Length: 193
Image 1 (tube, helix red, strand yellow):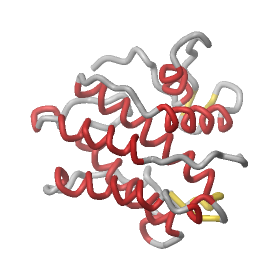
Image 2 (cartoon, helix red, strand yellow; image 1 turned 30 degrees about the vertical axis):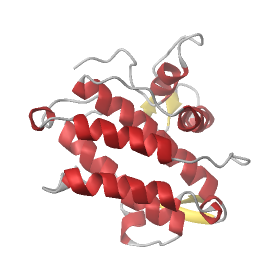
Image 3 (cartoon, rainbow, N blue to C red; image 1 turned 180 degrees about the horizontal axis):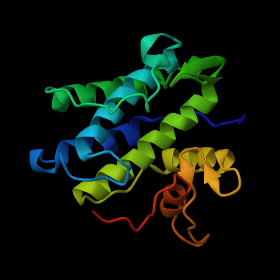
């Protein structure tokens, strides 16, 4: 994937942070469209990927960028309401540096070009924003630039009837871009808890 346009992840980060802020303590155990993840696991995953992709943008490779997200079920820390927005803000800030988009980096233990890592993090923010909104019964409109990057990454990564995160869910071409992106991520856009 080359020629990816540099985007500001800040708007999508703010959307995800606002969704997380609206999650009630009573919703933390609710199921999500992510198999095996309750809302608290999903929030912990978003916190972890925020740190990992912040470090990937900075080319600060090590423990955070080597950790495979499927290695363990993520657990939410007690101070998550304060820490998650800070981690998301730091993620967006790190990707504002043009150097983050060039050269090689690593995330999830996988070496990849900076521009591909940027597309992956856009996908993570858009799709997990949708997951969180669906699980908590919240309205969701992702940032258009992040949505386009997420869709581009998932469409490029799809091979036959499989995407990078599992089997594709067929969605009509005339469906909204968010629904098509969710389908490419292996989720049913009509999922309800």
